[in-house]
Amino acid sequence: MAGKQFPSPAHSRPASASSRRLLAVGAASLILLTASYFLLLSPSSHQPAPAILASPSATTSFLASLDRFLPDPHPSASASPAAPGELDAAIRVQEEARLYGDDPAWPAPAAGPLRVYVYEMPSKFTYDLLRLFRDSYRDTDNLTSNGSPVHRLIEQHSIDYWLWADLIAPESQRLLKSVIRVQRQEEADIFYVPFFTTISYFLLEKQECKALYREALKWVTDQPAWQRSEGRDHVIPVHHPWSFKSVRRFVKKAIWLLPDMDSTGNWYKPGQVYLEKDVILPYVPNVNLCDHKCVLETQFKRSILLFFRGRLKRNAGGKIRSKLVEELKSAEDIVIEEGSAGAQGKAAAQDGMRKSLFCLSPAGDTPSSARLFDAIVSGCIPVIISDELELPFEGILDYREIALFVSSSDAVQPGWLVKYLRGIDAKRIREIQSNLVKYSRHFLYSSPAQPLGPEDLTWRMIAGKVVNIKLQIRRSQRLVRESRSVCTCECRVGNTTRML
Image (cartoon, rainbow, N blue to C red; front, side, top):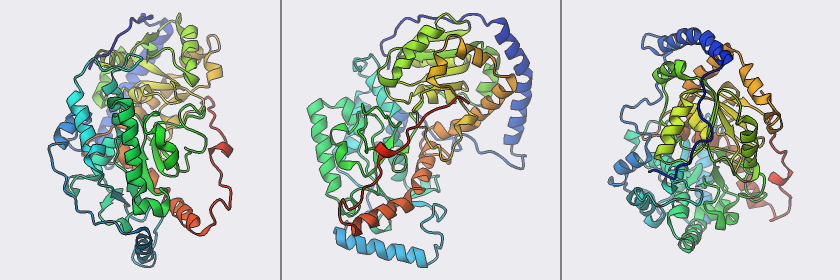
């Protein structure tokens, strides 16, 4: 769906002599490196690497996946929930059986797959919203106030769909081994709330949306499992900063699936979000994957040193963008363009990223930016300028292997950023580009969900929280309410970024 387009204030210039030398030095070595990498992936290798999409039938398109998902019935086999007291006793029996039985490592993350109970909410919270999205997708006049196609924004935050569709799929069709769905609440480590908070925010009228949020809140908080734990073992997808905002204060003890953690207070109130409780998930990329073959073919076309296409004026931490534009607008081999996320914008962004060595990833209205993940799957080295950014799955992935981190204060110094990028040697560039090829799989949502894909890493991150979740639940059951102060994000050390 096309959105409003804006003229580009900067255009691609011929590469400078320094850029051409950099490319010439690196090209031959990169070919050899890539060839070696392909040999490592071949069936004859002793250590074969799994393909990015192991299943030929997997799709990464939200709309295409919906077309397959919605017509299929998803029958229920869940038992009726017990009252909170009965559920607590049943859970205690299950946990003792696992502790003293054949699961001696429990509740450590290594003790088998995470057990998730998926609530079967009324269709107005789930299927009806998915159908609304699908049926209204081609409404090209439906734009946000800044000109971006609203359906594309929904796709960008559609993590709720990808996780839910995998969890409720027949076990014979699932590939993930890190998580299983259980049908009895007392067997669950975690409870998943499948409410599509982003679709409802964007596609319903304001008052209708708020009413639906209140209904969903009541439905969830009336559940015995919620009342037992006060939501501490419940997962709620609130991946757009505005989604579920009017009632979020009532579910702040639950595990939130977020795009980042804004410390300004504009999006999340103090005490609502912190890394010990919540999980950061990547945006859904807006561009197509540039795979091994694509990265090889585009090496000689990467004549742009640094590329950025997006909104040039943002609020809060995103004000850094206008400062960067002022600093970089006349620099050689650098392209800075205004643009949105529509079909034409996607094509322009994809083309620009595949012609560039580095892709600028500054903060937006929040510390995160969707173009970080566009750059990763495009084989373009991200240059992250966002001092308070939290990254997805950082307990598992080391982003120093695939990105450069630059402080905001350094980036706006006259000439500093360009000099820094031109000073990175060809060997380091080849290493990062090779790592981008390997890491791309971690940011591609798909159906069926793939091992080491973002769905898989989400559950692995949550599994690492289970012991502390159980501690907090049991502690809350025995302590006098408010008898101890609990550290919230207000007393946690803020995140700062240093240059690497």
